[in-house]
Length: 301
Image 1 (cartoon, rainbow, N blue to C red):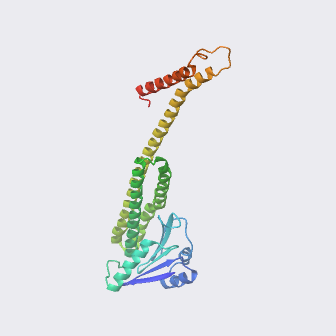
Image 2: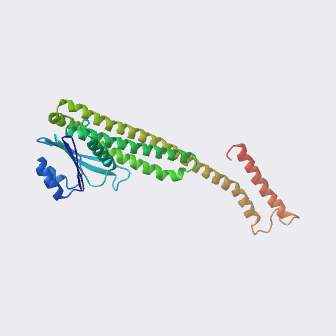
Image 3: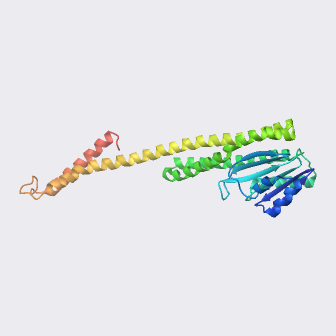
C-alpha cells in the first residue's frame, strides 16, 4: 500500500509491504538506484547506511512489544526533496507521525522540514520517543512483578521475570546496531545536506541514547528482582526442607519404639502389665513433646 504526503516542497511516500508495481514508478520519479529499489521489496536482515548520488539509503530495525515479530524493519530512502519509508507491517508511531504531518499540511504549517533529511530526523526522533514509552510500559510491568514477589508469588514470578528479560534482551539486541548506523550516517548526511545537518543527526543519536540508558536501567532492575526472587525462593525451600527434616527426626524414635514393641519375641518389657498400651503411648508422646520443646528452644521451629 502506498500513501503520499506533501508539505511545502518535501514529499513523504510511505509504503507498507510494497509491490513491484508501486516501487517501479517511484524509482523512475526520484531516480532511485535499481538495487535500492529491489531491496525495498523484501525485508533485510542487516541494518545499513549507504549513499549513491544524492540519495541515502538507511535500513533500521526497531523493537516492538505488540508486533508479530520482536522487531520491525523500516527502510528509509532519503533525498533532498523527498523521503520514502518502507515497512512490512503497520507501525503505530509512523501512523501517528502521518496524522500530524497531514494536519500540518492542511493547516499550512511548514515547520522546519525543508528537505528529506529534516523529515527523516523528525521521524526518527518520533520513533525513539515511542520506544521510550514502550520501555516505560516494561518498567511498570517490573513494578507489578516486584509487588507480587513480596506478596508471596515468587514461584509464579520466575516465568514473568524470564519473559520480561526476553523483552529487554530483544530491545537491546535490535537497538545495538543503531549506534554504528547513526555514526555512519552523520558524515554521509552532512556531505549531502550541509554541515548544519550534523546537529539533527546528533539529536537523533541523543534520542537513541536515552532509550539505551533506559534499557540499561531496566536490565539492572530486572537483575535485582531476579536475585531477590531467587533468594526468597531458596529461603522458602530451605524452610520446607528444615520442617520436613525435623518431622522425620521427631517421628523416627516414635517409629522405632512402636517397631520394638511390635517385635514377636518371648519377652518384651512393659508388655503384659496393666495399662501397657497407655504406658507405651505416653512414652511416645513424651518423646515427641520433648523433641518439640527442644527444637523450639533452639529456634529451629
